Amino acid sequence: MTFEVITIFPEIFNSYLGTGVLRKALQKGLIEVKVNNLRDYTVDKHRTVDDYPYGGGAGMVMKPEPLFAAIETLCPERKERRVIVLSPVGRKFEQEMAEELSKEPKRIFLLCGRYEAIDERVRIALVDDEVSIGDYILTGGELPALVIIDAVARLIPGVLGDERSAKEDSFSSGILDYPHYTRPHVFRDMAVPEVLLSGNHREISRWRRKEALRRTLKQRPELLEKIRLSDEDRTLLDELRRKLS
Ligand code: 4GX
Image (cartoon, rainbow, N blue to C red; front, side, top):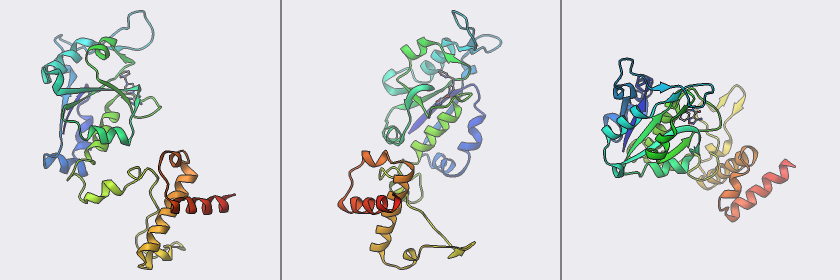
């Protein structure tokens, strides 16, 4: 799995990629992240990457030449690359896209825009996908690029210590995670639910499923429409709805 980041602020990536699970994955060669400085692909004395918008208006636009030079130098073969631009007008990045990208054989280019916009000819001739991490406006595409690298990397076999972790987390089941507890048994008058200490694994599973459904019903009811519910799920949901109303 190779990511090619294109940014005018390469330093942003050092701390996050140099820490924790991602650092280990990079050390082991499970993922590769090359952080490329867009200014290295300029030819003028001031290493200019932006310019004024034709037609006027506020804000600067990223010039096409450095972006074309960067991508075509780093990967001249179109079929060997998948170019993603991070932008608030892109398709929403969700777990499903993370799963799809984790199987991508091509090198994944992440174009991190700054300023108001990028020249439209970059989109037309270079970009395969335009992706947004959510409906809010950031100052640049670097955080979204890190979000994508992080979410994709943890799905690659061997990146998480425990192979079960990625499969058992929220979203792989389509509903929210159940509540978790660790020691101490009682903390500030709040006790761990007795069922979790019972050793009865059938009861524990049923309790976890019910609590997961409870959270989902309360916080993300729309998720319940998207998944196939078992007969037991329906019984549990009926119980929850009755006590709620
Ligand atoms: N999810 N931004 C990108 C500059 C820009 C504008 C247009 C390309 C085209 C964002 C988000 C986001 C702000 C990053 C504008 N680059 N990106 N930047 N939300 O808000 O991905």
